[in-house]
Length: 52
Image (cartoon, rainbow, N blue to C red; front, side, top):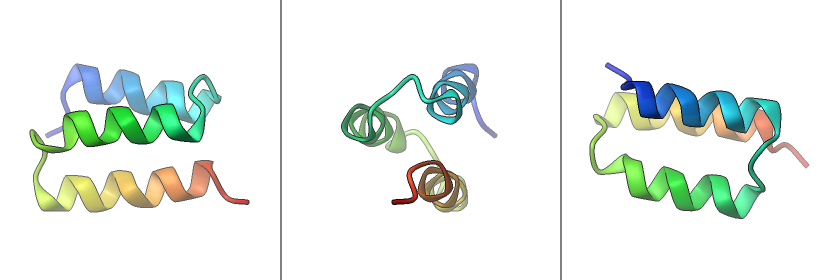
């Protein structure tokens, strides 16, 4: 289950409010609270947002 903080972070990523480095820093910070399935889901969404 994604928390409010994770949802807000993901919305900011999708709107382009974070640079790639800032998004990854926050991802590492919050990932310890997530399940493996949630991490994999967020990883794929991050890759979509930051395609070269």
